[in-house]
Amino acid sequence: MTQEQLAEAIESQGTYIGRVERGEQNIQLQTLEKIAEALHTQIAITFDHEQYERFKADEWIWKIVLLLKEQDHEQQQRAYRILREVFTNF
Image (tube, rainbow, N blue to C red; front, side):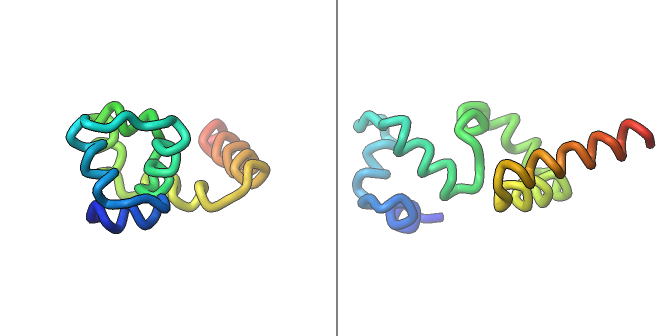
């Protein structure tokens, strides 16, 4: 994703993204959340790039996470209970 594409996704400007990347611009938590959402990730993962790469390298886990991310909280809880039940009794 280019700086311009990311900026568009978070309703900002490409120059702002560039300043953030270079450490010239402070960023608000709200903006960081928008960036994480645009990149289909979580804020915590953005701080641990090594963990993020391991996580994303596992195609099936990544597919499950993206699928769950599209669901509301209740559906996410239901999916968790189902998976927990399946793997507990496996």
